[in-house]
Length: 111
Image (tube, rainbow, N blue to C red; front, side):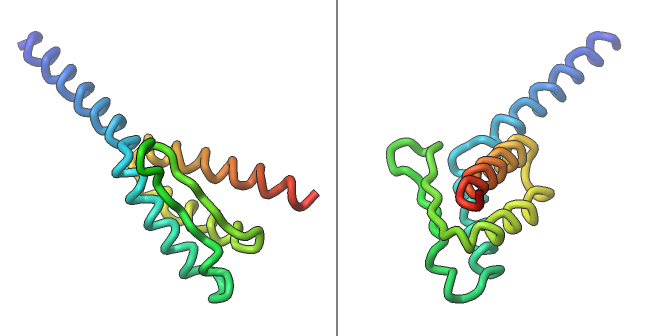
């Protein structure tokens, strides 16, 4: 019986690790980038919608190019924050860091 408990625990841990790893899959990140791009465009005024663009690198799939106007940054941050609760844990951490980097870069423009 103790042996079954040990295997069950190991299986649970392996499943948790696999779920965390899947959160950083390029397809998962691309999916969330599309949602964030769409939400940011829906939140911002119509004249700023074309200024928001997120592209996945065709060769380096974990690399994304994000372009936005300075005025659209708050809407992009808002879209990220809105979607964080629905993301897998590793994906959430990734986008929290993306939001932090965007805010740091934006602060350079407002100084």
